[in-house]
Amino acid sequence: MARRLIRTVLLAGLLTALLGVAAAATIEVRDFDDPQLARRYTTLTHQLRCPKCQNETIAASASPIAADMRERVAAMLEAGRSDREIQDFLVQRFGEYVLYRPRLSPRTWLLWGGPFLLVGLGGGILAWRVRRRTTPRALDAAERRRLDALLESEERS
Amino acid sequence: MTRRLLLLVPLILFAGLAVFLYRGLNHDPVGRESALIGREFPGFSLATVADPDVRHDASLLAGKVTLVNVWGAWCPTCREEMPQLMALAEQGVRLVGVDYKDTREAATEFLDTLGDPFAVNLFDPDGTLGFDLGVYGAPESFLVDRDGIIRYHHTGAIRPENVEQEILPRVQRWRDD
Image (cartoon, chains in turn purple, red):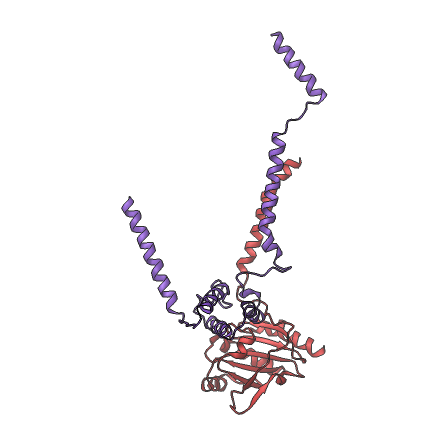
């Protein structure tokens, strides 16, 4: 049993590694003199979405437009442009679609705020229910009379 | 009674989610509105397919409602939409082509076989104008008004129904404007 598990895990690891090699083989290697630029290049290309593919970063996509975009990102980095300028440049052409990390704007506040809103709502409901269940309540007159009657019949028997 | 109604909440939520996801099934993930709608056509300076010595810039689009079509001889879908482009040209719509990431030889052969509906064909071998237009796959078409503002964007092949229902009415509208 344990041996089979180990074999499965090893096989899965091997397959993942092979897939990684296949994906990397289609993407060109880019050299930057400045390691800082190389790091920014990696971060940026992993946060930009290929407009041709439905769900791939431009760092991972083999489509020609993703290659063009990587090229442009590298050129703009070398030219000393800021990350924000590079993102703006691409958003102007390809739309907000290319941002994997959408910006906070009136259009996206629900997206960013939604989880907090839901947690708040759920927490509120939970707190309300727990409190309602645990707070003792004084008996009203009718209940008091009924309790007395019950206790009395209990004592008599 | 209100407690009973509360029991319906999960059902309503489920129905809402089902409608939302069902719509997603039929939603075309490729076609989406261009970021350039309502903006000026990007500047360019490109030679034509026919003549490397003739250059045009954005003033080419001034004064007349124009359908700019980004195409390439390497693109099978572009072949598919050529009859529709020919029909548009016959109906008096001015077409400007952007020959995207192509060679002059292939483009010329393409136009010789399938017909040439374009008033001018810009030659964009590196895809620079295509990039500025946010083109991520040919064919794409942009309707540009007389002031050079992009008014409409179509991704993928123009089909006969697109001509009648989308393009001709919009050409008319921006001509009247």
